[in-house]
Image (cartoon, rainbow, N blue to C red):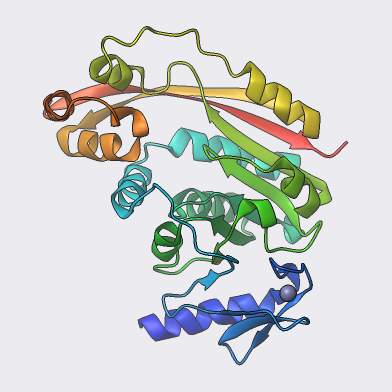
Length: 295
Ligand SMILES: [Zn+2]
């Protein structure tokens, strides 16, 4: 499929689901005009980018995440680094959202380069033979540009999570994976029978990388108590599960891992190089998944 056909398909998807979107300035409904722009009833206008996404920011932002970080995450997703996590989330969505599979609509708040949302959509399609719509929001234009490459049953928007450009109660599943939250907004845009899924790193996540790159850092007792409490203040906690596993990575993959994680920030360059030049290493992956619903 040519790039233009791919874009046309994407804008058709946007037109088909325009009722889900709201103007980030006034929250009036947005309408697709001439496959070119999103316009609200107050006349605020947002043009579609030729790369197949829409920028719904009300002012430009600088984010610290750059293209190499997103490329690294995409690579790690492709080699299955997150597979057990993605698999568990997909299973749980199908289990918790029964019998509403037909109307599933998934929003990934802080989607980055989109590979988690795409993988979850693929797994749901394989398991349940349904193709839920996905919407990915991220503050980073670089991430969203990357997400919009190739085909996917998803709409990609550069957007501020503090003003999610979607209508209230419009999503049955809100994903928030290893990314900051805006619970008031999640509450507004979530369907009354919907779920919010938040993933946080646990104490053993990448412990080998931490130990090697910050050997002198005192190992603080690590607790997610505050994150859990904040989550429970906004949502009824349905379930919480821990997903922990070890994965063997080769040299090339260690490079991507280091680029994907902020852990190396602050470590000396020689230490980072030395660590990345091992032939292979066993890495611990350790996450908690929280599932919440409205009270
Ligand atoms: Zn408006």
